[in-house]
Image 1: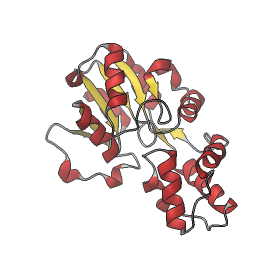
Image 2: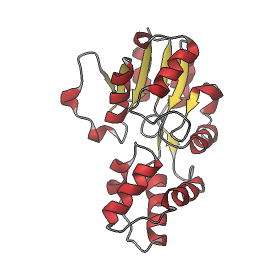
Image 3: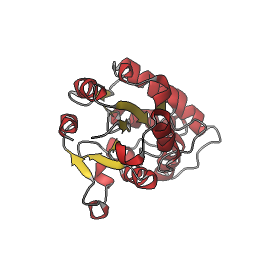
Length: 215
């Protein structure tokens, strides 16, 4: 049905909550702030490193230093794969989907971290290099549709032929802005912030990665 399937990364392809939380807390500790629980940090994920850092410092009640974002990125680069894992059967699901459609990744995470995680979890082989877009490139971050539109144009696909798979309202809005279909992962940690009242009758929700094979 779809000729292009585009995936979010955090909360969709991989569970990265602990590494992100521990990285944020290491930076906060360096700046004299108390640690935040993983449950507090997790909802801060999804809009890119600058937003996560700003939210973490706001929750701690202290002003971030001018170099807070690059310091966080450097800390996180040392922790990328300490605890981060692909969701169950993800490699198998991507292999099956890749035989039917072009696959891509669209994330607000920095590109270097994205590539390192995909390679470290043996998922990079499912995506062409040019089909992986991070949040620190020349294109605006989600929910701006420009990145998704670029991926459509790259393979000559129209919006009705594309499916964006994500776990948050950021992904939902991105699909809406680009007029593509959306599939939200209920198993993802961003789904807690999804407003189900806003979902349309054609919006899909899955409980496990393997459910994608039925779409």
